[in-house]
Length: 149
Image (cartoon, rainbow, N blue to C red; front, side):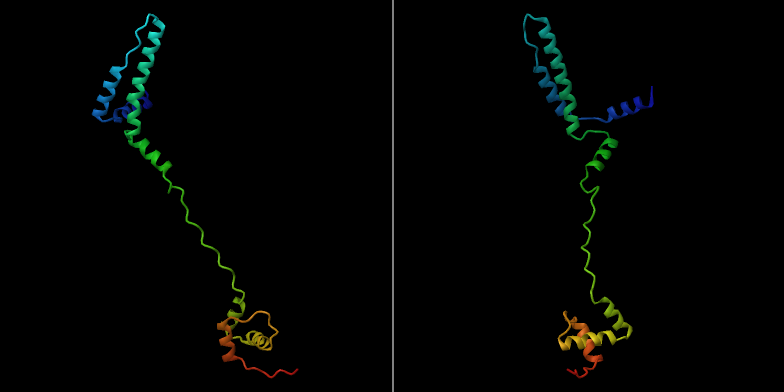
């Protein structure tokens, strides 16, 4: 025997279904009878359909009761898992800080640019106001020079 034949026989040996269900199916299958007619071909066709129906009824419940081999069940569960390919949503990117360069200069101890912008804000020529933390630094480190107009 080939290796796949051994695997097939082992897999078939693992397939089971509850005995009560087998009995119900067998009782129901015994109720199927071919029609009593004079036509032999019709009788044979009905007998073939009955055999096919019995085979389907015996195989069908085992598939839906989860009576599969463990290897197939594990493979099926990994493919069907909705969390298998889940990826977290990416965090929204923060907008770059327009005042980053100025804050870096202030942290380094250079207040020249900060004072220049603060004076322009005091004169009303700066289009956008300085953020509060930079205003506070400017108030403590910059002096307001008189404006000659």
